Image 1 (tube, rainbow, N blue to C red):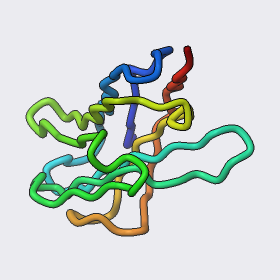
Image 2: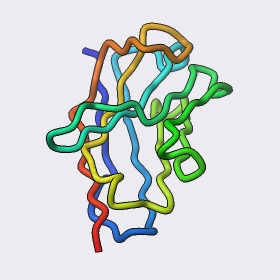
Image 3: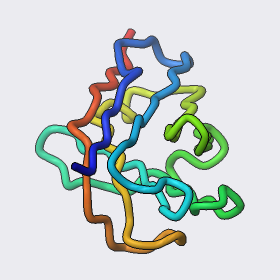
Image 4: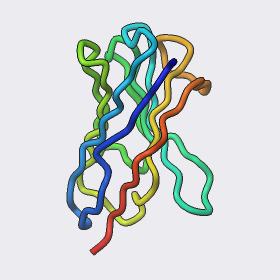
Length: 121
């Protein structure tokens, strides 16, 4: 019954901001790294960001570094992705996923349904 539910997507103009939320249940978020991924139509899924279980370690794709910020509130079982200075190329379905351990890795076991982000004028 592991569940991850993304929300917060929508239509925004270039330069605007959105905050995505990943609400989790069915596992102990305290011990789990969470990653954000995105996939545009006809494109491969790409990693966007990841945060360790403690929140101390984070990483970002070069394309979003300096614009996106990942954070977590374990008490609320929620991970966030703050997206600023959005560009049209950020348009994609955004997914969150949980890894098997507390540190970010290439392996993610469970995925949410995704939330659409569209950046357009």
